[in-house]
Image 1: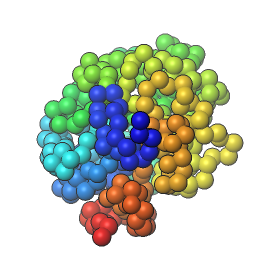
Image 2 (image 1 turned 90 degrees about the vertical axis):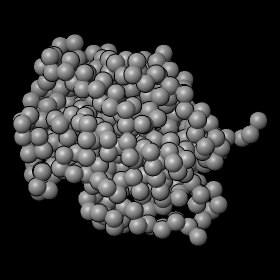
Image 3 (image 1 turned 60 degrees about the horizontal axis):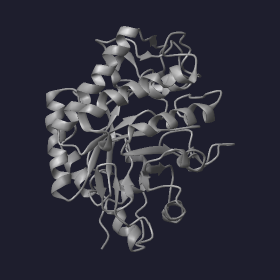
Length: 366
């Protein structure tokens, strides 16, 4: 039997991958104001089709789910049709691509969805920090509005609609974004969830919405084409929980019977997106702490390089590694890692917004 490595093929649920070098979801903020992916997106993603799996940038499931200017959606027909051009390009290049389903919750601003008004959240708790408005100006976060039960029901239907749209757009599966301090993570953690109804209080109640949404979208895709992303110990977007081990151990136990394609865990190396590679103080390895509890494939992300990624795969801590920043600047990253080719450094100034520079103009290896 071939020893598992970054370059060996594998099966993740119902999806076959050619290697275990995945492309992490990377917000690039290059869509139109209508949430339609930009014209260069097909080139950008197809350049990276050498990944075992591309996980798309986070894609909002509704207008109210938008939290940053120029991020793409999947709820309108125009958005769906634009994504179809992207998936066709990725497939023509031999790639596999999942869409990441996203609602930011309180990490937003009224200017980004003026018809819907204030951002929504499990509880009316204002996060610390600042947000980019629709005019790309930094302002303090607003105090969000607590979601009603009827709004939670409508939210679930928005996820189903988005999952169906993703299927029509030609994706190979979907990843539920329940990490990084966005809406579903806000429901999970008691630093942001102070509800007293069926969606708050106990660990079981706080996990209820995530599990409901998974069970809502599995009939659309089949469980083997649905993944989930979690960020235990993540501090990004003012997140905290009084017992993260108990919370995420319980949730992962409840994920096992669902037979998902994979569990995607973020190592707590940074306190801000695109930030430092330093592990958060006092935080253990997420993969070591929770990975063995999940009975299916585990994907790890968070500042990995070839050496520690290889060790994680060979030691059985992960079945794949999702690379982010170095996949931005190295569109042929799997080739470079397989043949020990030098990596092109990334330009952080071009991560968010703009056009081709820092997006589709990074060179391929000779």
